[in-house]
Length: 394
Image (cartoon, rainbow, N blue to C red):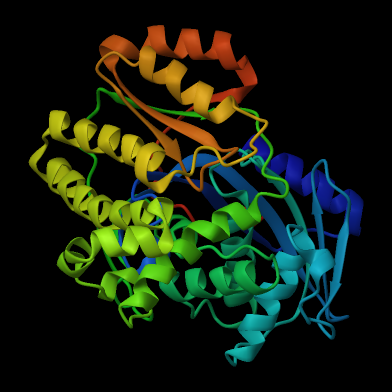
């Protein structure tokens, strides 16, 4: 039996004095390319990765969800009280309440659960631990109370709603869909109610993925992430549209000088990044399909530079923590023929490195020495990002 599940079963039995009846797995996600494009109806390439979150579950009849995650305090949420409250923001309690609330609001059944969880998806590691928990709780309620009737996109949408309203984070849908779908997916969010997604193979056995946590804290940075979205919306609204995807980029170019004077360079640069990044995503997808490694790495590198220079989600005015900016410069100076880009939301975030065989081990050694052994993780793409596992007790 999987040692992780053995540990879960033992902790579950000691905590709840009975045996779990269901087992679930979720994972982290890796944003290959497509930085801050999802919330504006753009395109992304995203992959589920082998940082695994596992859970053992059984039902309970008191209309309460109880979660014990290894290393964290026990959480108890009454399903009779699912209102959003600010003290739940950035807490797992907000995720549980939000998922249950939005499932109930959409007409799905909810009910009590006893859950024990352990995880390799560390909070603040830049691979979306919040989305991993969100989609897992939705999957549990879908499987146990709704005959496993929710498809991956529906699961992702409910998880995103929970993150927006009860966790207090104005994210797009990239994280949740990347995990719920598994593997690598090209996702087009033009239709926000029914985003198109296409599984894409990864043909390069000689490329390695490394996630580097620069050690900065995300605490109190939500407004900086929100400002990226708000700035993009300013330009969309200027043209009478709800999202940038509905704006003709030629109209933006024609009015560029006036728009800079009116809104400022940062706002316009963020809009320019959006349009250019969506094109890079498409080129990266075609590079994977054509097995063009050089082109794929070039698009990832270009994405990283655009995030720094146009999107400007590396640092902010008054930033006293330069670790992400310094870390990117260090990695770029040592990347050889590989690719470097900011990973995820940015600011006090993480770095994605994609390294060919020749450069992989030297790069891995030097970044572990620079950032610390525990801050650097080699990851692989996993096909089943979100799944109900066979019950090992049967």
